[in-house]
Amino acid sequence: MDKKLILNGLVVTKDNDNRIFRNGVVYVEDNIIKEIGPADKIDVAGLKEGAEIIDASGKIVAPGFVSLHSHLYSAVVRSIPFSGFDNADFSFISWMERFWYPMLEDRVTREQMYIGSLANMLGNIRTGITTTTDTAEGSYALPGAMDHVLQAAEESGMRCILSFETTGRISPENQELGFQENLNLIKKINPKKGRITARIGIHTTFSCPTELLVEARKKSDELGCGIMMHMADDRWHNFDATRKYGKRPTRYLEDIGFLGPDVLLFHCAYMDVWKDPQIFKAHDVKIAHNAESNAIFGFWPDMMPFLKEGVCVGFGTDGQTHSMFEIMRTSQMIHRIKYEDLELLPDSDILTMATNNGAKAVLKDKEIGSLEKGKKADLIMLADRSAVPIFEKNVENYIVSTCERADVDTVMVDGKVLLKDGEFTTVDEMEVYAKSKKEAIDLWKKNEWPLP
Image (cartoon, rainbow, N blue to C red):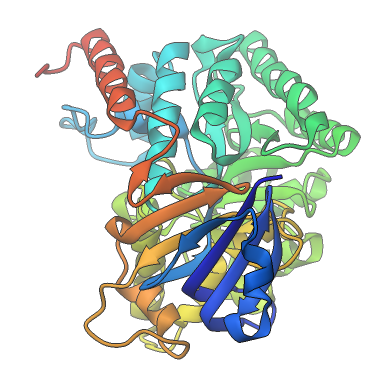
């Protein structure tokens, strides 16, 4: 039995009572938290025997962050030497059709999906993300693409919920390959009930026929796996749905029986704020709010109507950004600016969205999302470099408003330390990045972009 005893930390539990322990103790056996609380309430001496002692003096111990949306392979398409905007007037859908699909998504290889995903996961771990979802793109890397993403997930040590982005935009045959890729992965790994699981991944309402969405709902019910899909990140989703079906995407999805508590929708930036929150709440639909990536593209997602209705909203990186600290701050800022209300989304609520809400969104809140007895040992340790004392009353403000990814000192997933004193323990980080750079150059060559 593997035992770890974390001592002397400021422990932020994010449990239902939002308990915070000064001089806190976390005791882990294998991958489960067995004891947690203040040192004066726990038999520390009795727990030391046979345990690895981890001194958290001067550090904050908190639940690992949960990222609800990512295209993990996209590490190889970050900072490309071509903007994709050229001389055309910009709209997101035209950019996707002129640039993203033909030059990136349709050209990515299985090897690029593997190394890009692994590199992205390491970046996630460095910012304290212990659980991530993935919607893998690569329609011409089928079949077998997800075996490579799965290999990356296994090597990274992260907790992962994987899927392939099934799309109908290429051909019925390619659509079937993508859908089957999901089903094969689900049947392969979900019965193991391990650190890595899978869902059915769908691209969007505008790129997939109704028959596919209905079949996805049916298969999710049969397999108990859940569904993930993009939703209204761009206005085009609404234009397309009203043109085809005479209704906006949310009502369309409700009418075909697609919505449910196992549905996680990414973005939700252009919604009917008068009607959609009630529909989401009625069906217990979850939202992956990608504040930073949306803002980069000029989108302004408004989560307040959904949060007010009681809809579960968490955060996602979208694969293009790593820092959950930046994402938390971006979400807080854009909503306060929009409503001119400096009290919106207080720090404690923002931190809940990054941890507990993320766990609820993927139906894993009984396992992760907070530090409690009986839950999985997914946690982070943050360095305290503050110029003022950090204690129970201001620690959540410090995490949300001040911390950076460089402050992530230690990361534990499933009871295993992946990052210790800022260094990876199981993966050669520089070797991964070197391989990722090589694959990125190979992709750039295909598009005749500038090379280093």
